Image 1 (cartoon, rainbow, N blue to C red):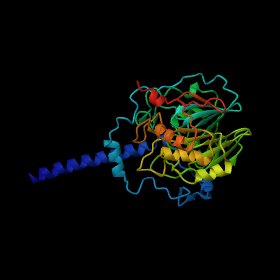
Image 2 (tube, rainbow, N blue to C red; image 1 turned 90 degrees about the horizontal axis):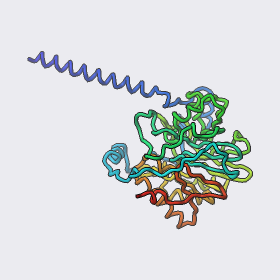
Image 3 (tube, rainbow, N blue to C red; image 1 turned 180 degrees about the vertical axis):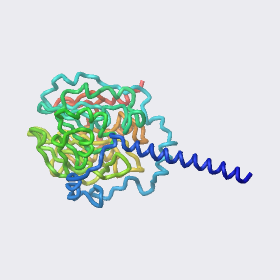
Image 4 (cartoon, helix red, strand yellow; image 1 turned 135 degrees about the horizontal axis):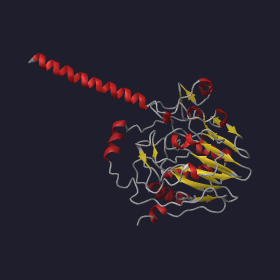
Length: 378
C-alpha cells in the first residue's frame, strides 16, 4: 500500500513538474513576440549611457517617482482591479464619433483630428503628423487579449489616413506605441521622432534607422521641415515587458514661425511644467493627459485638477485634455476626468477644448467644447 502511494505521489509530482515546465516554455515563447520590442544595444546603448537622465541601468525622473503610493502595493492594487465596482468605468452606450474623409485637404490653419485616448493627427504647413497612434482594437502585445476599446471608438485605420510624414511617440507603453499600427509604416517614407532608446523597438519592427530621430530631454531637432521640435521632460516610466526604464519618456515643444503647441505624453504633476512654460511659453495649445489616474499611483499620472494647473503653468491659451474616452486603464468612471478638469478650469480661468473622436480642432478657428460624454446618455 505504501509503495502504491509513493508511486501515485511520484506520478502527481511528475505531472505538476511537467505542467510547470510547459508553462515556463510558453511564457518564454510569449515574451519572444515581436510586439514586445527590443531593448537598446550597441551604439544606441552607449549613447544612452551618456545621458544625464540614465543611472544604474535605467532612465530616471527629475524627482523621485515611485510607480505606486507608499500606502499601496501590488496585492492591494490587484484586489482593487478585481473587486471594485466597475459599473461606471466603461460607457453604457456607443461612444459618439465623427467619421470624416481625412484625405481631403484640411484648413490652412493647423488642424488636429482626434483618434481617442492619446492619439491624434496634426496637420500643419502641408505636413501630416501622428502622435501616439493606437489604431488597433486593444492596448496589448496581442490583439486576442487585453484592454478593448469602447464601442464606437475604433473607427479609423491606417488606411483611412493621408500619407503620414512624421510619427511622434511619447514613450513605449502599449496605449501610446501600438505595434499593429507602427508596423504598417515599415518600408514607407514616414519619419519618426521619439525619446532616446525607443528607436530600438522601431528598428526591430522594420523602420529604417535613417528615418528615426531619438531625443534626450531638452534636445532640439529640425527633422520636421519648417519647425523646431524640442523633447521636454515628463514624470513617468517606460517598459513593454518586465524591465522598466530602458527607454526614455518625453513630451514635445512644437514650434513654427506662427504657432507653439505642447505635445504632452503621460506625466505626473511636477515643476517641469512651469520650467517648460517659462522657457517656451505661452502655447497656442497644450495637449495634456487627463485620465487613468488613481490615488494608488499619484506620481505617474495627474489628477484632472493637476492637469488644469499644468496647463496654467505652461501658459496655454487652450488646453486639450486627452488619455481618456477610449480605453479603461484605471478605476475611475470613464467620463469623470472631463467633468473634474472642467470644474477646475472654470475656477482658474482656463479654456478647454474637448473634441469627440474624429472631430477636428482648428487653431484660431474651431475649438469643440460640447459635453458629449454627458449629452450622449440617452
